[in-house]
Length: 109
Image (cartoon, rainbow, N blue to C red; front, side, top):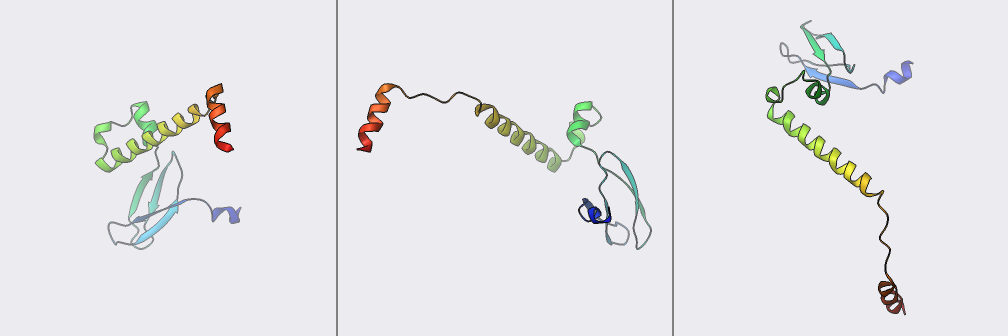
């Protein structure tokens, strides 16, 4: 189990009081009480999925910063483009008609 702890994601923040950087584990969906190892200032850190918070109505679009809005829009556009590519791959391939086959065959000679 100790071997796996190396690969768990960590978040790095900078203490606003003493400017020390420190790490703590990422726990999605939970609130953590973290303490600066240098000055013992305490912080409450929560890991929330902003998309789920928007869908559930727990987060208002107007409260997001400009950077957060931009990141969400890029994420959603990427998701839509990916879904479009996936669904377009299920279409039947276009079958060439007999005229196209004879033109391809004459160019090969």
